[in-house]
Image (tube, rainbow, N blue to C red; front, side, top):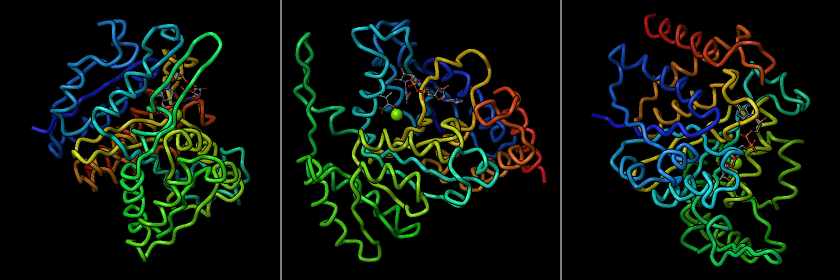
Length: 351
Ligand SMILES: NC(=O)c1ccc[n+]([C@@H]2O[C@H](COP(=O)([O-])OP(=O)(O)OC[C@H]3O[C@@H](n4cnc5c(N)ncnc54)[C@H](O)[C@@H]3O)[C@@H](O)[C@H]2O)c1
Ligand SMILES: CC(C)[C@H](C(=O)O)[C@@H](O)C(=O)O
Ligand SMILES: [Mg+2]
């Protein structure tokens, strides 16, 4: 039996996870896709229950799963904990070698008018950020903090860069065959190596065009000419920042999902946003980020392309009717939007 480990996490995590699982369960009910769920703790919820953000039981469940769904972690309640919820997520990424974080950015027809950026600049935008997820300054040693000095270390090895480059080039081969490698090679040693390895790897993909861009100007072009991009490949922290910036193009952070891929074949799927403490518990969070995380899982882990397409179609129909959460200017609740998507999906399957 296909096993999915579900990590609801904190804040809006449980609310949007319930939405994602609600949609997935339609396929089980209709006999189209069977699976069992193992629900485990991560983040603040795990700190509260067992005193640490990533219990061994959670890791063991993930390691014996076919895929992992994660809601979101973190929140002000745990800001002063010795080990914060975020440390649990980072340790999970590291322990499961989830090195390639794929963050698709598509501006849909239904939502294009909701971005603060002019419609003609962004209509048709369709790119993917490939973010290196297990290296860089997030994980480098030594790191230190005392009252007068703090130290973080940014480390990248050639192997780590080569691995993420290959993921980006292979993805580009299935798309418009252009890779933009983003770095800060005018300043950073890690970025100089990044650029050199990008050039070397590109020799193996002659059908793909490689261009380099500095991260500061990339941040600007992403807003002014986002249609220029096909696949952006970048290191861990730049990818984190650029992907939240990219959400401005799509109308809301609440519509963006991601897959974190591992060579083990056990991948993790999660929204790119956080636990949104400002709206948690109000039933107003946009469930689309989690529902799209489920469609990414259906495609990347289970090759269930038709089922994923059906969910996309159901979401599109619901958006066309203007049934949206507050972040997109609507006044429907999380559960209402989910209910309408479920109904559309059932109709699509039936028809
Ligand atoms: N992968 C993760 O679990 C993850 C990612 C990012 C941040 N975090 C954590 O989340 C906590 C809050 O961080 P933050 O406030 O900077 O970022 P955030 O992404 O949680 O929220 C930023 C803004 O976007 C809104 N937003 C986010 N998701 C939404 C959704 N689905 N629907 C509607 N609006 C949505 C929030 O209401 C907020 O105004 C922090 O503890 C942070 O470390 C976790
Ligand atoms: C919560 C935090 C550690 C995480 C990150 O920085 O990777 C988040 O911002 C993300 O984008 O998934
Ligand atoms: Mg982030």
